[in-house]
Length: 77
Image 1 (spheres, rainbow, N blue to C red):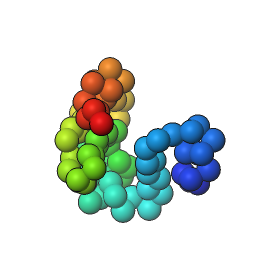
Image 2 (cartoon, rainbow, N blue to C red; image 1 turned 60 degrees about the vertical axis):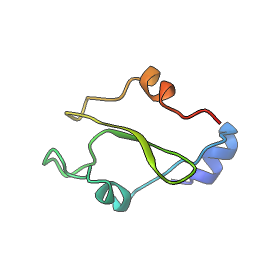
Image 3 (cartoon, rainbow, N blue to C red; image 1 turned 180 degrees about the horizontal axis):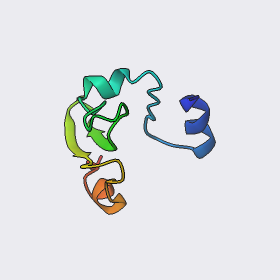
């Protein structure tokens, strides 16, 4: 869960979140959404103003956002 080391190793220019205690997933309303005691697969793109500009919340544990959809919704700098 060392996101700083991961970000440096991969030379990422964006923040990576690790949420082992489910604090953030509970705040975003995606923890136990399906009644299974885990976070529902979700993606939230947050802009520089801390506004959620795009989100995807899966319908089931296998439902994941498509990479092309994620990339096409990242705001241009």
